[in-house]
Image (cartoon, rainbow, N blue to C red; front, side, top):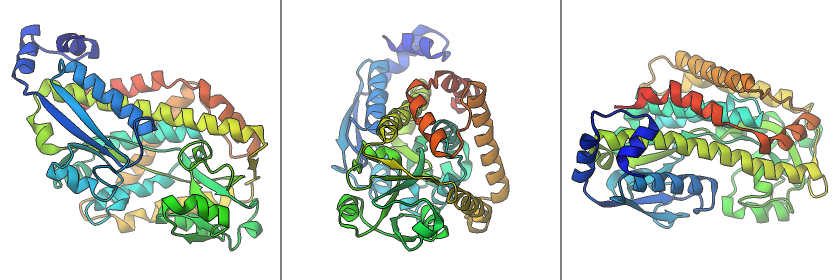
Length: 397
């Protein structure tokens, strides 16, 4: 499909087909380097970004192509911000909490991962939509990235983190003194509230650490039973207490490269960014559904009753959010107002999902298993169209 046809299909406007062709004729061929430390082209982020690349290559009639560097083969998690800003790569994945000195606003925003429900569909889609909307429009954040010579493309939020353990835990008494891998205050403070001890263990050492009993639990998504570390053999006790989600994993592009693009191409990429975020939402639901199948079988994984643990975690997460204004960077002029607005947007997007027939799941073992069973049937296309119609136009030139 030609660039002009793709523009028309995307709903973008331009004066004439000849004008649309003019910017393409003047576009210099280039190959952009993408660096992803989190996985390869078969992982959730990788699949979404490959589709994103293919749409841009098609839109530009092959003038823009890509070279992909997966699994830290070009830049690691701590190198990506400077690497993309300096042009070592043109596109990369940022976890802002890894760089609190360089990205104080982004790192502070990470704390909003505690403002979630534990209901997978709503945390992924409503939480993801709020994170996406915020990183694209919140000026203290976009200006912070721009000072590092990068342009924010899109961001997403994960499902809630839970506890995957090698020992049963269904009460504060059983949790007392247990060691849990928790990297970051948004998780470690909940671990402490449950009476457990947070420990810092490298990701690559987590499987063996659980296997050998170096620590007892890992704070992570249940999808790690079937994806990534595949912990089903070493952490068969599923403790679905609601921990914060990983908030605002952010894809960025070198700002000089972005500014070199004509407005028509920037607008197309903006729409492609939103589509990539939607693909990641759906990818998370797909992975969680597969984990849910394994959990529901009850043969390899045992689900613990968290009725006495969930209220403790909920109270702690609320306290964490309430304390966030005190730690806000100076560039956030009204932190309480920002937090109130952020929570209101989560509520707005949650209501949209409820209107589509997706009720927020209660945090009981039965309701959790029922929700897992329904994840494969979730259709977010209407939700995506709502976001596209309400938010995306305001991001265009």
